[in-house]
Figure 1 (tube, rainbow, N blue to C red):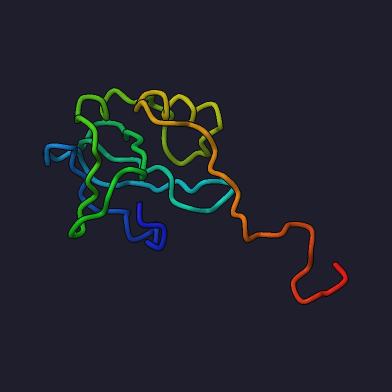
Figure 2 (figure 1 turned 120 degrees about the horizontal axis):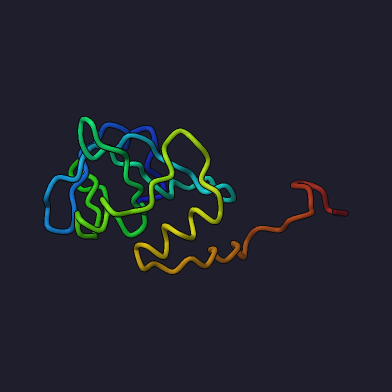
Length: 123
């Protein structure tokens, strides 16, 4: 997913599956606790239906439409954790497994020095 995109800009966008079939509309966006990067989107799959969680990586925002590279049936069968609540690490792991994605956490950035204070030579 484009990491410079405003997660609020995704809300209300149409979402389609790997064949271009409409899944629904982005209802909420969930950020990674450690990085603050948008990680999951909750897609409202119908007027009286539930939200389905989809991974924002490897999804793409193309011409204002969220393209999710998975089959509609797989998306609709994703674990239902409800929306408006924090996803636990266990719930995220279930979602990663459901989509057959690698659930390893990202490597820390090499250019970040933790424990030192910016601008101090003695830190």
